[in-house]
Length: 319
Ligand code: ADP
Ligand code: MG
Image (cartoon, rainbow, N blue to C red; front, top):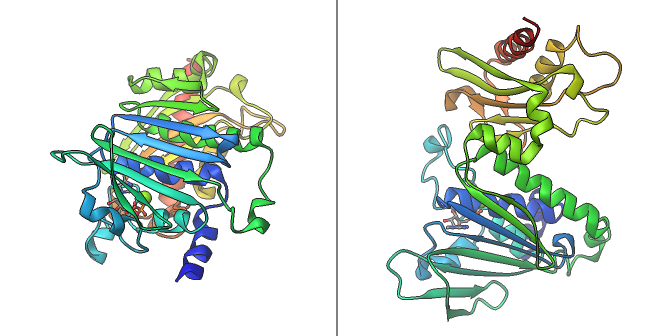
């Protein structure tokens, strides 16, 4: 079982940033309004994510760390319309199998918090307000081969920050802060979507981009399309979300790229933030361990809609 968990961990946990992604997903699923991410040594020594969400009742704490234990869906049928970020019950078990993990949580109405040490299974009383802290220390300590693949702390930190950025863009209603070695490195207060884009991607990106909006029945696309002058040499400002989930999708990326066909030359990469909302039964999110890839029921239509939406946004700027 330990081995199976470690193999599953290989698919879900590649580096500290993957831990950040999964733990922040969980915090958001728990209804957090504030999420704090505290890192040591780029997240390799420690990733601690604290939230003010609904917490986990003491009697359910051991279950949360079990493989395939999820409180989020109860049937295969519900998978069709899953609205939470998590649904497989894999992340905590996988992370626990390749790190030293502890979970401290307090649910509404509980007299105090409880701390569960993943390795020993020991449950002890602890102090904190309602919500959950998940502490992940010494990632890959027992799998030196994996640990060797990690880059410098600075690079791992950059990946962790990118992971929080992806969440922060999708959830402007939630406040985020990131600490490294005890120092506050990023803080985004709850804001409007427009303000959040400015806070996370910078005023320059905002000035050099245009509002994008298209609605076709149950399909909605909105966000900001960067003008050609906001294009960059690297594809590092490209954010696509499907029903609130950050995805990397070739089809969508191609649809967007083709909208820039006539205005962007050479190898320059367009910058954009695109939110796609679509009926859950039109898209399958359960095709990749990290859920970063999705499959659309009607790919051709998606490609076109996205292309037109971006074209419209770019055309506005010239009129
Ligand atoms: P999943 O998110 O797919 O359900 P996880 O392994 O990420 O699986 O988490 C397992 C379970 O632990 C969740 O279903 C949830 O019940 C509980 N849990 C994990 N993190 C939190 C949190 N921050 N707040 C409240 N409950 C949590
Ligand atoms: Mg999860």
